[in-house]
Length: 283
Ligand SMILES: Cc1cc2nc3c(=O)[nH]c(=O)nc-3n(C[C@H](O)[C@H](O)[C@H](O)COP(=O)(O)OP(=O)(O)OC[C@H]3O[C@@H](n4cnc5c(N)ncnc54)[C@H](O)[C@@H]3O)c2cc1C
Image 1 (cartoon, rainbow, N blue to C red):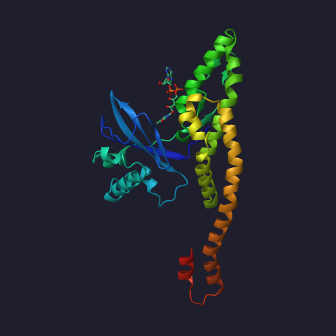
Image 2 (image 1 turned 180 degrees about the vertical axis):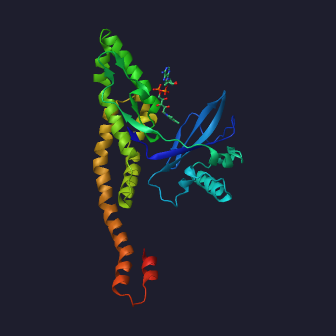
Image 3 (image 1 turned 90 degrees about the vertical axis):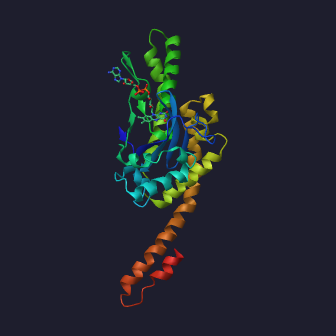
């Protein structure tokens, strides 16, 4: 069990209120969270799921996710932040909701991996009981539905012993999906590595068969096996991420050097005039 490094809190729009600018059937995913409609007693309702990553700096607007004081400053920060990634939902959110948000509980979860999907031909695990991922994988419900599909074919193929067949057919895909989930869940504290990963995400998304397109985008209808989709993503990662590191690490090193040189200089020349201003402006 690997706890999520993300924490979430939901902001609700008015029930039944839609906008022409957004398709209620689409689950929009952003770096600050995601938006989706829910069924609220028969009425569609837009929600904004805001996300704080443990690695986010204290100055990040995402810190409102765990703030519990509905102060004017926090409310303004929340509005500004949501406007930056989900501007079309903002007009649908009632004013009092921006206050309620701060008293609503946040939630976390865990990536759960099981060593087996069946035990002694007696019990089989499907859906979240077999594997639990995290929201950015976009594969919570899809993976469970696919388990049932695979399980169904196993019953047809071998009605007397479907469980071991299910394990044999499904485990490699679930292992691949969990490997991807663990990668997404891993905290990156080094700035240069974060930049490299950001470049990799942007480059990979441009490819015709990107992981996003294949998992929950237009190519999702092909229901390609996770093991193939994630193997191709790993190959692209090996090239693109390392290429991005070739740029980001030297630049990170130069920036760090520029930031640290003044301190070294100050400690060696305590009587000299500080040169902070010039160097800071270079940075
Ligand atoms: C807050 C949140 C947001 C999510 N958002 C998304 C999303 O946007 N997209 C996505 O794809 N996935 C999302 N997921 C994940 C998704 O909900 C799960 O992957 C999916 O519901 C798993 O389906 P399941 O049938 O395996 O398990 P569940 O949906 O958990 O169903 C298990 C059922 O078994 C019942 N149960 C438990 N114990 C017993 C018992 N002893 N006897 C009888 N019944 C029992 C439970 O009450 C429950 O109804 C989200 C999960 C959470 C928690």
